[in-house]
Image 1 (tube, rainbow over the protein chains, first blue to last red):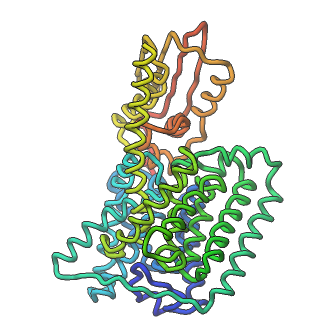
Image 2 (cartoon, each protein chain N blue to C red; image 1 turned 180 degrees about the horizontal axis):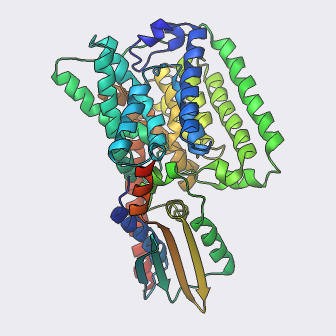
Length: 381
Length: 125
């Protein structure tokens, strides 16, 4: 735990390699429970986005967020709510997802050796800036990038990295990637998802709500708990987890901290936009891109890209699987570059690349649909 | 995060985007503040909506509103949206909504607690 607590947490720091299997699980558990506790103490119900927040926090508790480094960012958001005289629960989602910037705290504290106070101060400052930026970033992609705070943190990360670089502090991206627990973790995922599906089947009433869930595009905000009930949502979460597990198994990838984090994030967002109809085309796009480009699907970057690229699931849900495949391919190209741009300080690197990809697609589609509408109207007149 | 003026503009944008999808000839909008609430009513005399469509719109406008959702995702309201279910966002941002369709004239109204009252509550907390 001490090694995890003092690790830089930058992309890609596998806590299973740094602190061992047990310590990584304890850390992920504490980080996830912190999110749950935050929601509970603020009187926020366990809705789709809150479930997504808790699972994302827990997932990244395997690689990048630790039990203490999440708090300065959360405190920064709380400070913003105090200054703007709004209840903290209005910003709780930004606070939960904003913990993507936890590596800023640990890198400054231990990577640069400035100490815990300086690291925490920078984390608080970053957290303070997140809420207004997160709302603004939504408009760029119109809710087609589910990990919107990833785009926000990546954007902020560009400036922070530039500032640190200006001060003479450069960041070298680490790559720790454990392989020794892969078999055990694979079994854990299957049992975990199986349990979710079983509980979901017990709670769900018929398949009607399941069919309506699959018809949703998944654009932000699509709360499956409110729309389809807890049972159907749990089934969906379990199935999406198995999709992630199936992909890793099929391409011969490794189950470790980062890939487990990817699966947990997919599972969480299966309560908030992702489902069996809109996720597979994106993953297929990422997989197909490995035929065209110079990487293998089981390598760390492409493997994580396939899991996390599902942030673009709404593009597939709204405009069809072909566009989803294309979006997945474009995304995989971009995401291989973006981690270096923000120095790995933003853990949601795919949220950042996904936001840029979604903005590209939405911009073109928006222009096209307007042009077509005017063209059709002119033809009718 | 959205101030009252911004919120009204976003909601108006959203309502207008919805109304303008069918190229209406005349749209009337009324904004008023009464009893601590902001009310916006949009009237469109040539919009033909079936009872089922009205029921669906009424349902979307009365989407259960949650603080953590409305402040953050409310920022999406009024954008040039490519999602036909955007009324759900509008429903999330307001406290209530109602739609009436009589002889081809549709009247759609939404309301929510005014900013001054929300701030007073937050201050008391």
